[in-house]
Image (tube, rainbow, N blue to C red; front, top):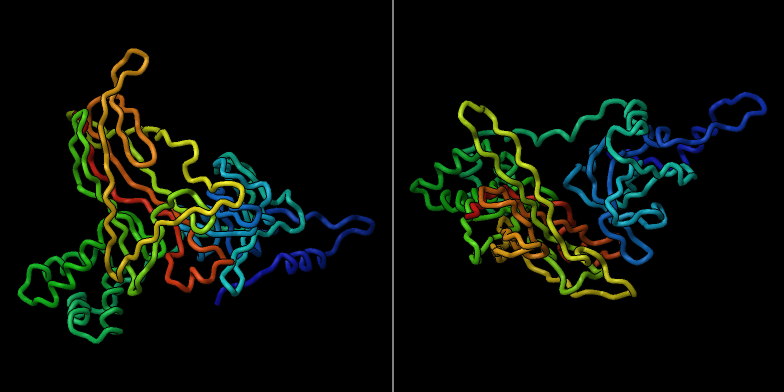
Length: 389
């Protein structure tokens, strides 16, 4: 059962604490709030819609089992964090989740407890960690009970409920199920081979958020100046239910915000005798000024809604182009992708990932939640190699 704590309870507890005669009660601090909060997080505002709602991208979880850093996005009322803007500023926040699933920011009656920080080394972070004790990350999924081969058989020949349960068990097992799924895919049993062909592609890609993961392909892409190649961005559904997902918008609107971007880094060249090459430096993406921002004045964009079947993947093809351009009298290479481009230092090997962020339906949009829309999250794909000549 989830622990439900409200800010008023904390104030009552603190008010009951003895104080010296004539002294005012000690003010409530963020550390006090963190002790009783369900979750303590570091987050940034990724979207502010009108004057009602703010979407918080969860960057790191200091306490709690509900949220995961780098994966989850939650909606909160804007009045609970009124100074939040989509400027990348990080916040240290105490959160409480109510029985209806909504999250609320606890401030103990003072906006001073809505704390902005520059980095994890900020003294206030150390104070809060000391107050709440050691909280590790969410535990990994339980190991698959029973023999993998038996679950493959159940997925192949059972009635729907048992089949779906077996498929979910195999996906939860992840890489530990891959060898036997691969063997089943090469076997003579057609039903088991069908299970393997369905599940093996879903084991690729990046981390899972909200039963979805992002898979980028092909594994290697070779480009010369002037080339335009096709890149496959696949939205994989690791659930037994059909999911509706907003992959973008004709214009950024207030219904559902979704934004796709790309991350590029130079891949290191291994030198003779070197065991582990140094990590390549990330290359800054140059994005349009209005990228990912909601239009003002009550404008509502038209969301691009797609359906992802149960245990299936939605392929979205995008173009990637390598240009040779002249800037300040110098010839450079520019890698163009949807929603921006990268200026490359020269030929070489680069690692490319796709990123997709969507906060999903807000609490005041129950018709979307009940309509099978993805609840949202932060998706990062696997890394592919781009060879630039």
